[in-house]
Image (cartoon, rainbow, N blue to C red):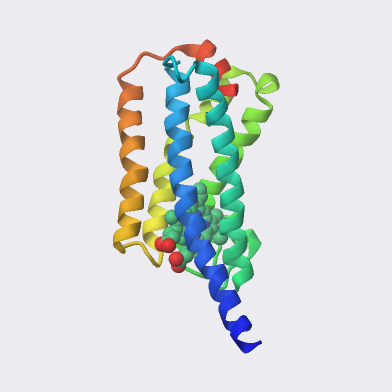
Length: 191
Ligand code: HEM
């Protein structure tokens, strides 16, 4: 019984860390797929609608892993974190700056997803303005990870960081050097 009591909270904390790493990787995949969608990239095996579908669904899976990341951190109770700290930046009693950056990333993600769901009513320009913050969301989440993660300087986490960062940086460079394709591309982004 005592063993369960000791192991269970530990398991939650491990889950916080594991889901943090997976969320970062998935966020990178969502950003790269978003760039591919906006430049209307396609190949015989990856038609445009598949890329757009993947972009939308990987983004939704990011939210699922992020929810588990936050829930396990709060429920675990190992550090003083409240649910509200995940939404209101810099309000946490635990590493307020670094956890606060995680909250900023979460708020940006929520804004991106909500505006995408109501895009038809919102209009293309407003939707796109919010969607551009996805580029800020990624580095903010990455800084949160390095600042607060217990594993930040472990080799496996550095590998995760590199696997997450290289494609995003390459895609961002490609995006700024590639002509914008306007609303048609955005229609693909909605999938
Ligand atoms: C898009 C948003 C987020 C991403 C991509 C993300 C990702 C990560 C990553 C990769 C780590 C490092 C894990 C490790 O070193 O093993 C981490 C740590 C952590 N995150 Fe997040 N996170 C996000 C948002 C949040 C939010 C909103 C909270 C608020 C509760 C939060 C709470 C924590 C805590 C408490 C840790 C420290 C875990 C430890 O000490 O290892 N994160 N996060």
